[in-house]
Image 1: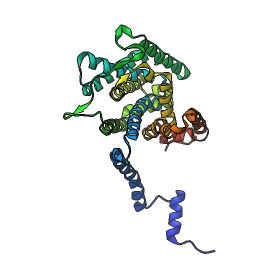
Image 2: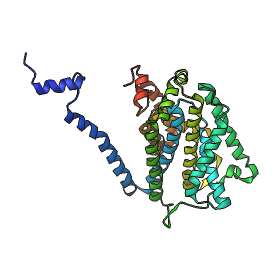
Image 3: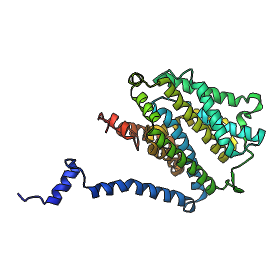
Length: 343
């Protein structure tokens, strides 16, 4: 039998994990992630000059729903709470933006934190009585919250929401005297916000709060035994998620100009939930991929509009059978679903 050359034998041992990779190999592998990230950023910056205004608008809505998916991922992916009422906080942010802009002429830049604060306050008030519920019970309760708000918007309380016709935004984002109403300018605004939120959420995931959320998600009893205030941890995730959804509502209102109850139906809640599940629960890159699948692919299938929901349903079934952890799962969820120990 021919003897294996030392260099080949070393490569085989590295492949099967018997021997740790050589420093040069480890450095090369470590550069792959930053290189891919840099390539994605460069491509993203150049995208508005490479495609038509139509696809720039599609990318804008992809970014807005990526923000919404990231906000819902705080609740569903990080803490493990089933929430189908997230659209309500999105609606609160959008309506608050339009109403306050009309009533007091507040700048849209100022209305981003204001809408986020109002949605977060609503999230605290609405989630506090039901935060102790688990699983299906919490899911049903949040569906009820979503429908209550939608019906309230349709009934035009005090003439504020405009009923089924909605309300019109009269202002637009301005920066150094330039309006951000053109597709490519609004694109940079939305994806700049996505980049800022991703940076903040990555730091939050590695903080004590992020680790406490994951402990609550894995086992509430064990988390409580470790000294974690489970109720406060859940409330904090709910409030932060609602606030981020409210801030995304300001961008949505500025893009759509007209805000009506038709934009906040139960189907929107299903789409948001699917973004998190499809991308991978607890995974920030997964949410970006999931939002692309839910917002960009339907546009590619526009010529088959009558079959789009059929494709969507079939894709979800296939995903749940062959890849339940999502398109880009977090390492922790992937290990849990595979029945392995966490690395």
